[in-house]
Image 1: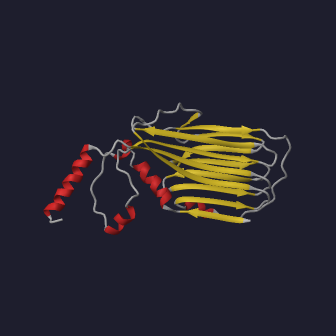
Image 2: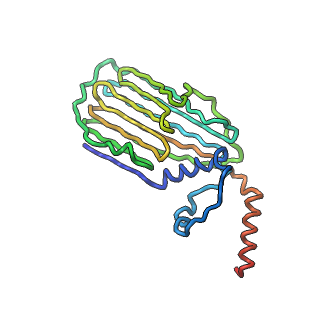
Image 3: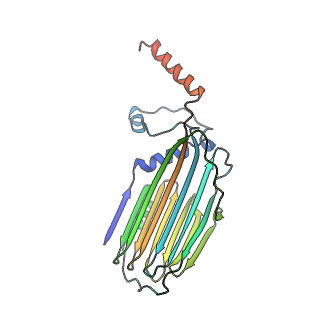
Length: 254
């Protein structure tokens, strides 16, 4: 069985716009540029004003459970607010023991897929050459409104520094979480030639890729973006700007 799914959609574009409009990074340095009518029509309803985002967080999780019940995986979290000085990722590895047996050596063969590493947007791929496997790739965006930013959750796990790799292993295989190339990467290599899983968030998009070579494996890749928007209404400056524009239209006869 061979299945590939690629999603290059406004779904990730919306998330990217939300991230780049976070006030800690986007309030300074804006310069007006002319935008064509066609570009405006494509952007309508797909942006928020800088300053409206008061909290942004990301949660990534990858797990692999083999036929014996052994599980290997990791989670990483990051949350930033207006008071955040530097975004930081915290990593926790996950290990569970199964029934003690050894899965049958994987004998499947998956060919191709080199182009998956060069895509942009959201790319999700599941390629299987075994039987009885289940694999899930999921991306979710949770957008809420609030008057105040939520309280920062105490960081759990190990701080991931730039260029560092945090790893773990057990009977199910090994997992490595690294901060390279301006992004975060989670890689699982399953034992006994059962396959591999890769999840990566970097500039340009998100990749979730699973290769299954053995039987009866359960694999999950999850990325969740959590955004909180300020619902206190438009600022005084924004309202004044809108009123000025309306007055200009009146002078033109509208």
